[in-house]
Structures are given as structure tokens and as C-alpha cells.
Amino acid sequence: MAATIVSPLLFTRSAPVLSAQAWGIAKSVKSILHGSPTAKHEGELETQQHSRLVGRGKYIHSFETHRVKPDSLDAYKKAAEKFYAGVAADPSFHVKLTGSWETVVGELDTFVHILEYENYGGYDQSTQLIRRSRYNDAFQEILPLLSSRSSQLCQEFAFLPSSPPREKGGIFELRSYTLRPGKLLEWEIAWRSGIDARRNTISPVGAWFSQVGRLHQVHHLWQYDSMEARKEKRETAWRTPGWSDTVMKTGDVAMFMDTSIMEALPFSPLK
Image 1 (cartoon, helix red, strand yellow):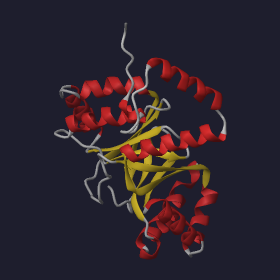
Image 2 (cartoon, rainbow, N blue to C red):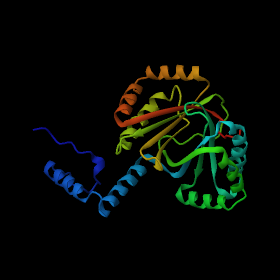
Image 3 (spheres, helix red, strand yellow):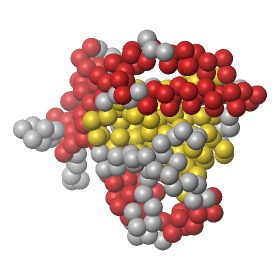
């Protein structure tokens, strides 16, 4: 008789291992409760547990994406610098600007800003202060220049905190993956070993997973000297033991993959 394999991550230390029959009953009860307040609460707890296991819980990062009207790019860059650099330089807000970029390959006329807050309490406090400050006027200058915008709150993976400010030049690559629901832990395990395999060649600038906004998404940010250097680094990675396993597991857990090549704006701390 084939053995039933049950992941230890599904149980606390004190919980007994369920038999196949008991596990089937538990699944049936869960299906009956689907959509009930109890089931929703349990789902929220499971999501929180996953976040605690894989995330570096000290900070929340806001990904702000602006799609700018093509005839307003220069005006946007000036307005964005006034707002983002101003907010980051004001110590009363307790906000750090990780970086600001313009997409040059991918969805053009698109700008990405990543802001760091001291967890959700810091996000609440800082955003409220900014709305009541003089910088809100600067933000209002941005709005007429946009065709659309979106935001997403993300948490860093514990194994890879984002890099501090630096000036290395070159290009940045933002790779975004939409995972199958419930696959975040598998992703973290695969990429933790994959990043270790690539460290001798290159390490990401940062790695995040979404918590508010578009869910089940993971973002990796890389920096290269040029597109040619990117090609060479990626070819070297394929010759690195262990990397191909990570790529294979990525294909198993991801539904969609997107990549953009970006250049840092002059005021970006990461450039």
C-alpha cells in the first residue's frame, strides 16, 4: 500500500500526524466550511503563517507604478523628483526611498518607485503625515501627467534584504512572477538555494513577495553593467551547479513571468 505523505508544515509541533482517512474527513469538513467566517479566518491565519516563515517582518515596501503620458515624460521626472526625493529627505516621515526607475525595455513610459516603511504601523503614520504636508502639493502635480497608476505592498524575503544605496551604474532588471496560490513556501525554498548557487556570479538587489494589491506575486531586482553583461551572467548561471534545479522548480509553481529593463532616475538611492 502506498504511503500517504503529509507535509510537516501543515501541523504544529503538538499536533498528531493524521491518518489518510482522518485527513480526508478534514478536507471534507474544510470544503463544507468554505466561504464561512471560520474558513476565511483560517485562510487568513495560514497566509500570515507563510509570511512569518519566509518574510523579513521589520519593513513593508510599497511598489508604486506610474504609467505616464508619452508627451509628459520630462515634466513627470521633475515632479517625481520633487515628491519622492523630498519625502525621503524629510526625517519626520520615517520613509526610505529604495529606488526610482524608468522602464526602457518592456512596458514603456512606465516608472517604478519602491518606498520602505517601518511595518504597517509606520506605513499608516507616514502616509497620513505626507497627505497633510506640503509634499502633497508636489504629488498633485504628478497626477495630471499619468495615464494610470497602481500600488502594491510587499515584504522582503528573509534570505535577501534589499541592498543599501549605491552607485554602480548600468541597468536594472525587475522580474515579476505570479505564483500558483499556496506555492510561496516552495518558491522560497527553491530560491534560497538558487541564490546561494548564484552568489559567486551575482546576487539580486532585492527580493519581495506581495501582501496587499496583486497577490501571489514575487519580485526580484537585479543590476547589471549592460545588456551584454546580463547575457554573460545568465549564461554563467546555467553552468552553476544547482541553478537549473531552481529554474525547473520555478516553472512548476509560477503561472506568469514578466521582466522589465529599467534605468535609475538621477535622484534614486540605488543607481
